[in-house]
Image 1 (cartoon, rainbow, N blue to C red):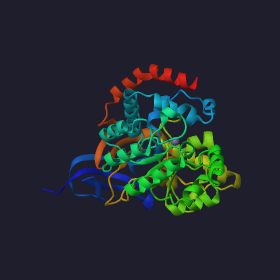
Image 2: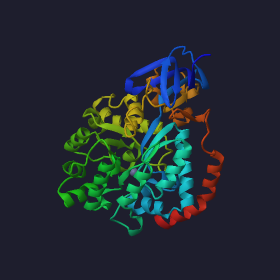
Image 3: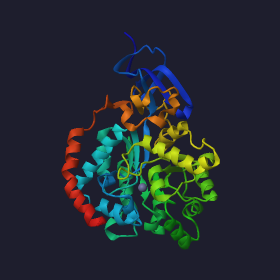
Image 4: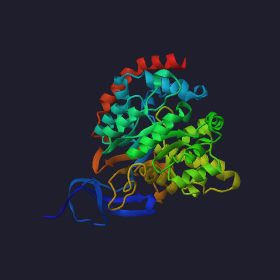
Length: 437
Ligand SMILES: [Zn+2]
């Protein structure tokens, strides 16, 4: 009898952007959650086999900044309403606070289902009203994730969350695929003592801090009048920047702040769609050139369909349009770099041996079917991000377990979730009308 493995993917093309590798017609063996062998004609029996002909395996996509509890705002906010400044304080946070536990559960299930069906294997939620509900749903869904309370001790009374609440979450979810982390919703809604306490606890617990940072002009202005320093400068001076910091947006950085972020090893999460609509063209090419770990985020499902292929395309077109095209330079962000940003770079938030299709790495893999009119022919697989959408994902493997097979999600009840979301729609719309007018 031959040696047995858990899962064997047969004759597939492997795209490993962090290793700058394209392997054609190889077999990928998975054992005990890890990629155990990659090669031609692997001679192993397997409990599960996936036929890879005509398909491309990529490392699982990582949505490094999302808002699971805003998905019910989908289709309700126009671009004009985004101008209700600041939209996060006037609409988004009040909406999150209004969700019942039942609505939060449906929202979490809908977001997890959406992510899995788009090839996303891991996410970092920026913080919402019910992180424990999200932790439970994501665990059942088989996803990898970071969850947190949306910490703030300034601003509206009924949305306040303490650092202690996150400490409990971090201790409760300290191991495993879904973990708790610390957060600062915005420096504008946190006192100095809350910021200090967050970073002290995070250091003691060796846990990440997820925050919105340098995302709008009013934040920079507030920071300058409050501390005489810009937000990143302040965190740098306090010694708070580290590889444990997940800094979303960073749309308004000076050259010095770019250096401070890249030297610290912090992850900067570029959210392309919302950056182009609402913020700015962030200095992503300079961040990459300085060695910063740049990841990608959807910023939640209220603006776009949680599709990181779409976000990669907006990133490539947007940044090329701004930094390249006026100078006849079309090499600002290559599709390979975009895919590395959306996989390996985001995976660094979670663990070292993640985000690559390479022996010894944890098996988080998305399989894309290229036997489609919009993906045929695809002479160079490296150009996949320019043509594919998340919907082209047929199979998804997380921690070595198959969570979607032939577009059938095995861990969540798709029909039931969509039905419950449809039933909740009228009451949700009432809440939105009450808040947004
Ligand atoms: Zn956000």
